Image (tube, rainbow, N blue to C red; front, side, top):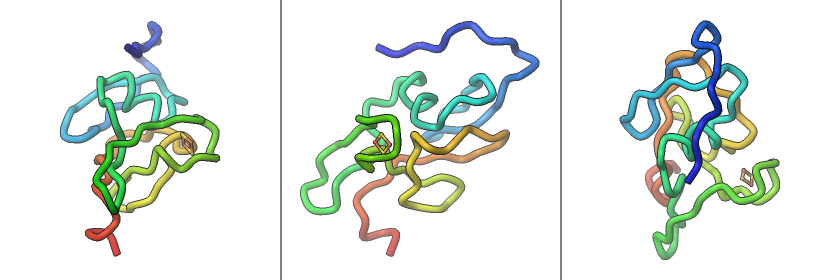
Length: 97
Ligand code: FES
């Protein structure tokens, strides 16, 4: 559904999202990178386990929370990709308290 626009490979950033090594343009948000690599959700809810995905893309809804470099509850839409970044889907909240 989402795809990256062509970008200059000299300004590429390499990162891993849910075990998938990807390359995106510098300045891309983690949420955009996750959607462009085919992820259909970025977290599951703590109670029902329902899958949730980025919605507002501007830091308001908190639906895009992911585990970024081992740190949970990070809003992926407000975080820019960095070289070597490790991003994981956030499963509920129990494991991160
Ligand atoms: S998509 Fe809404 S806060 Fe990130």
